Amino acid sequence: MRKLLFIVLVALLWGGSAALADECQGMHAAQEGAHDCGASCPEAGHEVVKTVADASLSGKVLCNHCDLHRGDTCQKVLQTADGKVYQFCPKTVKAEQLKNLSGKEVRVKGTIKELKDADAVLHVDSMEPVS
Image 1 (cartoon, rainbow, N blue to C red):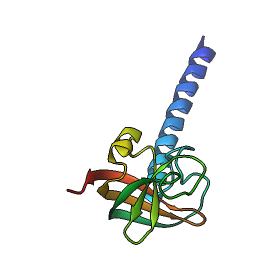
Image 2 (spheres, one colour):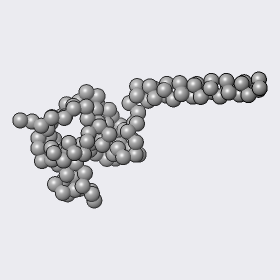
Image 3 (cartoon, one colour):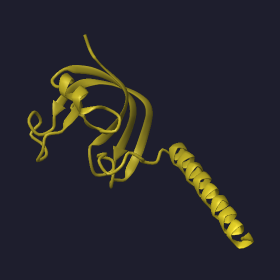
Image 4 (cartoon, rainbow, N blue to C red):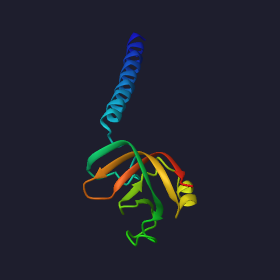
């Protein structure tokens, strides 16, 4: 009986310390600006060369395939007046919102991740149409 109690106690302590380690690791990743959006984010699998926090951009929401004739599939992007293209992280903006804003000028606030070998990725904090 004592062995069983000891095993249960060790298991509880082990599981608790693992949870704390996961939480701590998550905080460190957030502090370092690590990517945690998952495989669906355009940033996944690319090297981030520069991060710009609290960025403000204005531009037009367009389809990368249909409007810009780039890529093999439809994907909403932001194109600024200087022609720079930003991909949206799908975890930070809803597809329905992008669909409703397609072809419209918008103002976006968020974090920009410049990638070594791809368009920059925009992690959106807020987005509103320009009147």
